[in-house]
Length: 313
Image (cartoon, rainbow, N blue to C red):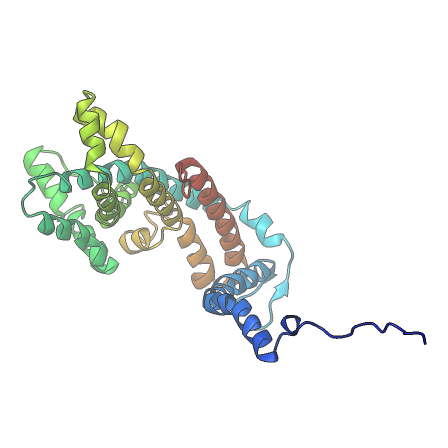
């Protein structure tokens, strides 16, 4: 009698996964994506979609009513041949460089003073320096307009009484109008950035300073060798933020000088505003907006590299 071996078709019970277990595994796999999905939905709606629409409109001629007319790269050719655009780029560069060169060291100096041991009324001074951030930009522009008025302004009144000068044309001179806009930007944002530096200074270990003092380092040497390296992440964040924000400046020159005198204080953002809402050239304004987006993006990436943002070294 021959015994025929038959293959064993039985499967180990552990290899058979119940349906409920498979559903639980799929739920665990998709759960992280579900939790982070609000960010991507908002990013898609408020970043990707507007940028895509702006890029499409930049290649059309459209007044905001009717069907856009396709013109290809004509808007870009016109933009790079427009003297007003180059004026706006120059003004924005002046605002950005002027603000960057002053606001970073000034904010750090104020934060160091507020962080000094034994300082009385510390919370009061913090509130005073942070107060300009919460004040309406319209109110700030009106007050600055009164301060720097050529005939009745407080600043010219002081210069005339103290120095005996005839006064400065603060808001009607192309040079001084830029200076006033930079002063306004500094006044509004120095206190805000000071709070970041102050938070960074409070996280610097006192043991490091004590070790530097034991090694013979004085206050200045300790600041350069201990404090500044510890503030590198905060400095990187502030530097990138100031650069990107100032490159898109709009409120300050628009409310204070309306871009004048002439186009002396017109920023790129205000150039886009004029093209879109004063001349109803939305296609042309979109082309300027695309160029501004690319420029700010590249500047942001360069600033990240320069300041070492995100670098844990």
